[in-house]
Length: 312
Image (tube, rainbow, N blue to C red; front, top):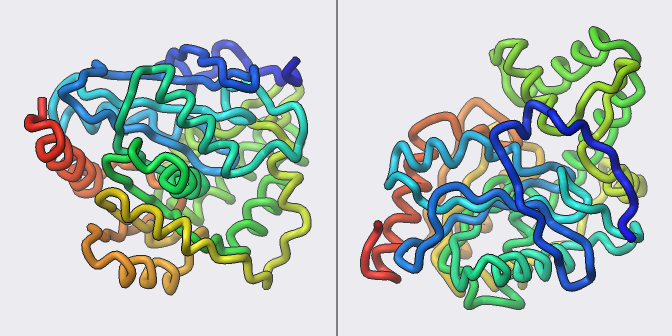
């Protein structure tokens, strides 16, 4: 049996994201939201959120996608075990990028998707790389956002420490103020009510005014041994596995998940890739500007037209 993790049934961040539960080969369930219409004439976009994050990071993306592209285009949002409304893994050591990739393949099979454009943010991009290594035929294209073969230890330590701080706070006003300070560095100039909405993508407030995570706390506990100056092992062979399909690489200007030199090396290794910087924000990307959303739409439409002979 999966370990129980209680979430509020009416949490605002999930209000527009009804899900179906997809049972995975090991018996746990992923949570999946499908907008648009799955069709053999359209390449679906499959969105994978960051390490401890969930599908609400893409809550506005499908709307932008259909507004800028073709209406009713299939966009699939996935919460893998340990995140959002999916089950938690039975053991902490069961969490891994390779297991996540196997679970994505299982979800696509359950939905009857033979090929897709994978959009991965942060850890979701590393899952996309592992998927390319094991199931290259599933990828019609890949979009990496603040994701690469070398994670930045500084970003991991900052994430871990920030989460520990805000989850230690007491009282709704104090908690909201803590999250606003934490998020303002990634989204300078964003109004406080918008920062509060971003807080709701990863946490909810319990009856005692404490921040409760929308993820398995063991995910963050696994980061305890990483230090600020650690140089994490590079996974360039996994990045090279993405040569199986066209590639688009995006990096937010204020990100501390992927260093600039890593991004530059990714571009050097894939001169055929479309590379863009999203100005004025950090991770995760908000996808609210028509420039970056439109670039992704064009990338997907061109791939769909090329591979399927039509874009609608």
